[in-house]
Length: 338
Ligand code: F6P
Image (cartoon, rainbow, N blue to C red):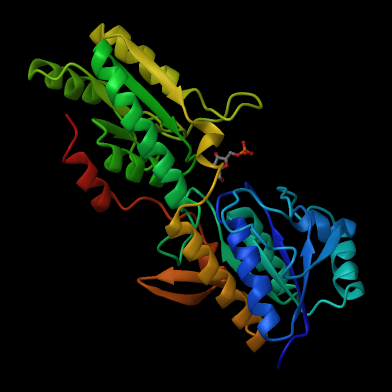
């Protein structure tokens, strides 16, 4: 079976590399004479009929650009029966034969449900959080880690000059991949992640011990979803993008150790800007393989990186729960605590 027209959408939080996928999908589709329809703002575009044809001209110069030329939203297409019906009607109206859905857990869980309702979907895993199962990495993650590493490098010099503790709060509400990799690559003195409930006294003991041994400053990296032992994972404060955990930690350090402490919340800086070479290549390979799957009529799958190969894994498997940080791997970061 070969398809003649496919749609592509980007859903959920944006991340660097989305445009690289769009470009690769359009270019690969061209080689099979497949038409590509860009669906704006995630699943919302298919519900409301907001689409645009994508040609090779549409994707000129977008490889290095962050964000997504298609726009995005977190709209769940299954939230009402009416929306679902509109989506399926538009799918027919535009003559689509497959949809490539590029997204994280929310977008791909909806893709899984729609696939089981009969929609031919191929998933592409994107998220700076790197929390999708079945793939070693999602694109966007490497760029975010590099932003964190760069921030820690910069914080080192000011921390050293003022003999302070610097707390860096990074994204990762359910998982601590960015904190672990960012902290490890930046040489953090302590890392707090949601997967490992912390005891503030243990961390303070490590920082204090370090001071006694002559180091006059410290860098602590905390994932936004980290929580002390015995407490539930923290919620975001109001409409803000922080749980406030960085400030809480800083206050406790100051009270317990009497050391001046400052907080940097990196927030959406981790999601913006140009993708790294790694993310551009991964996103491009994902885009190519997603078209290949659609062209072969293989649906309900997500393209994934396993080792050095791009493979297909069932959406059911990829969305069966978050891929959390392996604590054995985290132990490599712990070697440098204190
Ligand atoms: O899912 C990616 C992510 O960047 C999370 O790490 C973060 O908690 C969330 O998005 C922030 O979302 P928003 O842009 O809606 O504030």
